[in-house]
Image (cartoon, rainbow over all chains, first blue to last red; front, top):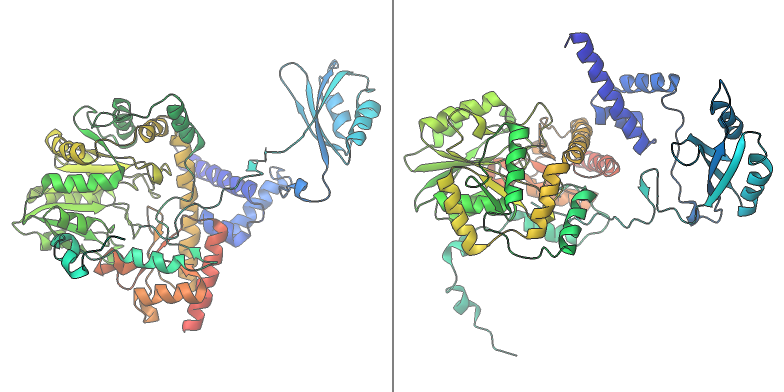
Length: 173
Length: 395
């Protein structure tokens, strides 16, 4: 392996570590990240800028247990069967669907249906309206099956009702 | 209520050897810390991860299937085979699962067995210090005499060939050490081990090599002294599942070595412990066969926290060598003019941070404190801030 590719590999590993850290906690500040990765703060800053510019890092968010607030949104996962269009495949219909602001996520799926659409609304009624009035009438949509989420146990790798306190004794040899 | 024997009457009937053993300094500190709230503990000598789920699941399955019996004294054949494959895959060490591997109740039991299997009254054992707190007492309990070989910060707490040589007498039977080290975090490179091995061979000593932190090596790869030329037969390699696989509570360790030594160790194990718990053994098989990815993720996380913590310690004015393994920092507190005990006690009461005074690991630990960084980044950062404020008040 040449020097150049060894450097490249080292950088890739560093980027992987940085992304995992930020995915775990996007509020880690630059000095903390620099400390964890054993590089300078300037290097961390430059790496993050590069990843933002390349749209590898798209957004910094928080994972929120909404059901502990008095503003609990309703979420549904909708299986959508569509007819793909010549030339553009599923992309065009996907685009038409994801432009709606109430749509949280759209995935192209293998298996029994084509698109998985995650929709968030204030009430069940609001989502029902969206399916009936906006999603189903779209030309390429053949059928929809709506599943409402009743309880979130784990989301984004976080277990919601986890009582995982540190069970270790305070001092051990 | 039944009447108790008078204290003086019971005391003189007890073992003089055990009575004379010094109490563990860790115990006293544990009692102190336990009385306090809102303490950040850097005093914990175990991973902050819970055992990976697939490993816990293997235990649940074992219980469901009714695996609740004894196993053979040596341990489940499947576990001994898994240990052999693991040691070959990770460290190129070849041990025969039938005669050269013994499954024990934690590495701690293996240390006791090894010392009891090799020592005769009057034998001396070199203990590289600072050291895990059980080595010297276990030597004493096995009828031997522990001889401390002190290391210091100048060599990054790594022993040198000359230091060993200086402590060897005609009665020296063996040497016991642990690298990567608890409490200093020092790890030995291959060439450093080789220079110790030369002295060990020349004086025909046995080695008890506690490699429980072997996987937690951050610069390069862990090398076992048993892998060096002509060292395998004179080395009793001890390791276990606790640190690398976050399995402290399962109590699964193992010893590998010459069949004659393992046979004697097995004899003691058979009369005292019988076998390690079967459900823990089955979980350990799963960990060794399918848990290496999870283990590597945990190791990377320790390494990142080491980087952060050591940098922080040096920044707040507690000079610390870079530990190359385990999950401990061992900074010097000499500049404060306090003893390790005073420093640790005041840090606890005045700043709410618990650490372990270095001298509980041997007299060469005077002037140092052991801090475990196996705790969350948030806790590490908060602990460093509390320590910085404490140091400012001291100055």
